[in-house]
Length: 294
Image 1 (cartoon, rainbow, N blue to C red):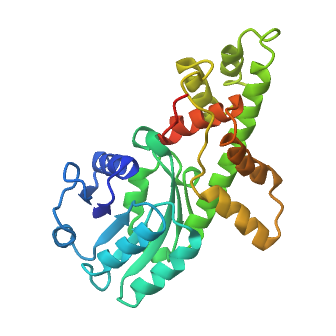
Image 2 (image 1 turned 135 degrees about the horizontal axis):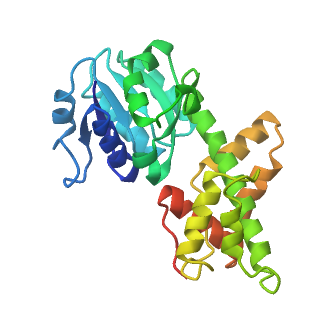
C-alpha cells in the first residue's frame, strides 16, 4: 500500500511515521521544506501509484477547502481523497460533490488520539462508500491500535458520518474533561482535610468506575505540576464542541452537560480558575495543545 499525506504538522507527521512503521509506503507533502517529501504538489502526485490515495491532515475550514481544490488539479479520475482533519461534517458533502464532478472519490475519517497516536494508535471513524473504505483498510489498520478492529474503528455511515461522530466524540470529551476539572477544584479547596490530592486521583486509576485514560493524563499533569502553577486557566475551544451544541439545537436534542462544558471555557477567559487550569493541562497532555503560562 502506498498513500500520500498532505499536512505534516503534529498529527500528520506522527501518522506518516506510524504508517511507515506498519509497512505502508507514504509520500508526504507540506509547505515546510524540513518535513516534506516532495517540493511541489505535482511532484507529490507523480510519486503516487494509480489509483492514488491522498490523505488530508490540514486545518478545517478555508484551508481544507483550498487544499481540496488544489489537489484536485493534480489527481485523476478514479483517485481517492480522504479528509482526516477536523472538518465540519457539512463540508464533506460539498467536497465530495466537487471531487465527484472530476471523477475523484472521497471519504471522511474522524481521527482521535492526539500526540499519543504515534505510540498508542488512533481511534478512527469513517464515512463513505463501503468499497472505498475497504480499499484503504490496510492504512486504517496500520493507524489504529492493535486488537479487535471494532474496538478502534467504525464505518459510521455515508460521507459526512465520520466527521459527525468525531464531532459528537469531542463534545463528550469536553464534558468529561470539565467533570474531572471540577472534581479537582473541589478537592483542592479542602486542603485542610484532603492532604494528598494527587494521590487520590492516582488511587482512582484501578478498580473504580471512573477510571479512564483522561484520569491517567490528569495524574500525569498533576505529577508534573501539582498545583498547575505554570498554567493559566485559559482554555480555547477548537470548534467541534460548538458544532455539537449547534447540531443539538437543530435536532432539539438536550445536551446540557456538553453545553455547560462549552460555557465553562468561556468563563475561563474571564478569570483564572483552578478547574480551567486542569482542563488546559488535560488538553496539553492528550493533544499537545498550547497552554498559556501564568
